Amino acid sequence: MSISIVHVLDLESGNLRSLSNALTKLGYEVKWIKKPSDGLDEAEILLFPGVGNFGHFVNELWSRGFVEPLRAYIASGRRIMGICVGLQALFAGSTESPGVKGIGIIPAELQKFDDSTKSVPHIGWNSASVTNTEDEGLYSLCAESKYYYVHSYRADIEVPVREGWTVAVGNYNGEEFVGAMCKDNVFATQFHPEKSGVAGLRVLRAFLRGNRISKAQPLHGGILKKNLGLTNRLIACLDVRTNDDGDLVVTKGDQYDVREKSATASAGGKVRNLGKPVEVAERYYLQGADEVTFLNITSFRNCPLVDMPMLEILRKTSETVFVPLTIGGGIRDLIDPDGTKISALDVASVYFRSGADKVSIGSDAVIAAEKFYERGQVLTGETAMETISRSYGAQAVVVSVDPKRVYVSSPEATKHHVIRTSYPGPNGEEYAWYQCTIKGGRELRDLDVRQLVTAVEKMGAGEILLNCIDKDGTNSGFDLELINDVKSAVKIPVIASSGAGKPEHFLEVFEKTNTDAALGAGMFHRNEYKVADVKNYLSEHGLLVRNEPE
Ligand code: 1PR
Image (cartoon, rainbow, N blue to C red):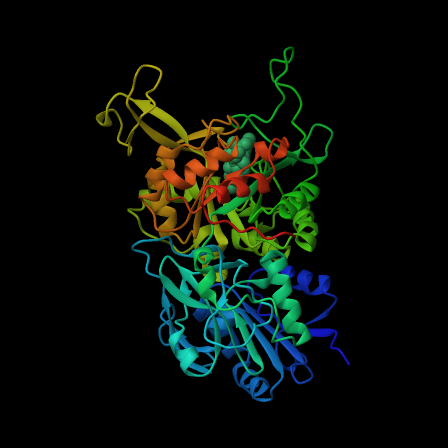
């Protein structure tokens, strides 16, 4: 008789809603296990997902008394699948958390990716290609497919192979790592199958059905080598706010002004309405977007947690969209109308439980960075970025930057970090600095973008969403000078944003900068181009993209 119930270990870390949505979509009922007595004995299939810090996750396993029962479960021969830190926890340890012991069925330690030549964390769509077996496949893993990874530490393939595991390998700029591995009843993926579109759902389904040998794997990596590795990541962004009729809509600004241009109204016309957020997100998923980002752009107005309109959007979106979802706007300490204080960590936790994989912090990050410098660059451990990244991992914390260009005649004319620009200012100025803003560009601050990004990297941000108010909505291409400048200042991945108007702009930003991802909004919302048009264009020009028909 086929199994219809899946038990899932729930250590309350990260986004488990998407996994549960994926299982529901595949026709399975989910039972959660928070402690060993919650039904581990009767489980026939166990999923073991984990995100964030190795030590934090594994210490939870020890303190909840899971380690011995899990070892016994594995020894019993019943099926178990580790996901992300769930894979890592099967190892003896990780250099991320010296001295913390993993479950230890593989006698090796995880190592950090080398960040001297590439961004770390490794975020994005990469391969998992089976190379050390004569099997025809492994749970429908396909060398041509791409899977969504997000991690800073990697498992080397040598020890698992020596210990008899079948290993599917990923390659991040020359460093190989275990993308997935399998031995007897134990299967584990470093990538998130529930966030890897149809390719990921296929793997999950094959595991749940027990179809270990499948025909989906084209034979042996080698022939497809040119397709292996991290793809150029393409993100669709939805700015969301309530319009004048009180409906929550996707909107889009010109240099952050989201009102229709009106000949009569000097204060501007209506808020542009470009569709319903859940429907628009689903459309971009089906078109092949690698991620979807929602920004609640009026969240600086008081937004009590109970009323958070974005929660429902996230919940609904995560039922049908199986790629990473980021939510931004209003991630900060809040006070509800009844006076209850809600920490930024609590706000983020609610978002994660509603289906978000990452939260994006804008205004609060600028304020935190200013204080960081006022204190002489001392960390307090209490900022939103620090508390959230401690609990959920740096990969879950994006900092969204809203800079404006300020032209100066010489570097001495400002105390801020300047660039020499090829696009001189109105009075022929050859230098510019990028000024940070808060509240969606409404307030200018005495902080430059370089100060901001270097501070937030120290405070635990895992990625930078780099907008540019001057370029936003202009369809004139990305600000390459800004992107190159930020890329040279940080190790964490950078998402180029603002100004995309046609596929050529994406090619340009990937070719002329080292950006880790590129984001578009208006050109997709206005139906001028589909996400797939951009991907096809990039692919025609020899760039690696994820191209999986949904
Ligand atoms: O400050 O933490 O509450 O977060 C507020 C968030 O809302 C920030 O991430 C901020 O960037 C965003 N935001 C606030 N006001 C606006 C606005 O447009 N009036 N939107 C706004 C920012 C910019 C991009 C846009 C790209 C691409 N949106 O995300 O999608 O510029 O556009 P394009 O391809 O059409 O040029 P907090």
